[in-house]
Image (cartoon, rainbow, N blue to C red; front, side):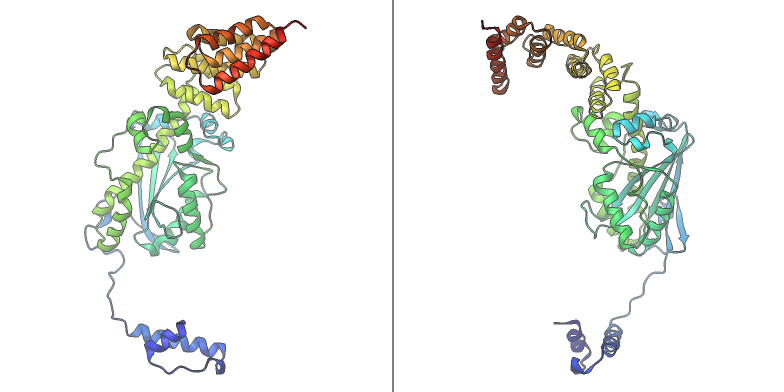
Length: 430
């Protein structure tokens, strides 16, 4: 049934032949019908703007209403001073994170020469945990460094009608910064906000900004010793941050829907705190990861497994010189698995650079620790076969491995047997 037919039934008017009406007459007729239908609806009295049915939000969260040419919304600002602690770190220490190291580990080279104070830390709270045009970002948490302090600014849409004003205000703040820092922002926050900017016909400033997403390097560096790579897990087990009475993320959407019905500020207090902690923890995590790059040549009190993962990541980023110096320090680690992995990766860097004697020395040291090390046997056999032409040494290594190593997998055994046959062929009298 068409809209015209439905309105005809609601108003009780007799239908008129469409063919005898002009387009303008049809539109005018539909408008009159809609007005008559709406006039039949029961009148409801809406609460005046800013009036709560429960505890006012500003009694629970430090902040207040902000007026803009596009409307109003709620803003909460707070500042952590230089000496304040967040987990193990002081705020003034977080402000000293190396951007060169951060850009390297995050794979964002364009941010290398930017000061940390030009970064905008971003985290959103939404009405859902999956993407789509129906997901509403009701709380936008922002943070940035000012000298040795860290400022958080949280923008809150008290209902859906305040989104446009909130987004335009956010756009103005973002335009003052040069790069973004998020945790899983590439997959979630930026896509969501981009959609909301389009729907509200606002200028979208985010996609043009260099973006440091801390989730990906965190997974690469920390997953080896954590049960998952959630920010809350990293906080508790790496950064030393303890959240008391924190609201689980999956409960936050329902809190906002409850807020829309009850307008009780007590419903949102925990949500603001959760969001603020996320923003500050991103700054702490950035500092932790950057320090791993900076301090890797000293080992010190840093987690050696984390340092090894960082070295591998830097190697993948193409900075073999930096990765090599990091791995050279890790060779002396008292953690056997770290030392072994460091020697393996470093030997490949030496091999690539043509530093054959240094690479061979590392392969021999690996065999001294484990005579059945397939990697070391294979690489050293290649060295003897192709570089020094010492076929007897290569043959001895491969034959010993095949005879004495019972735990070779099928692929390793096939590779070793193929090399053995080739060596025997090369050594056969012509």
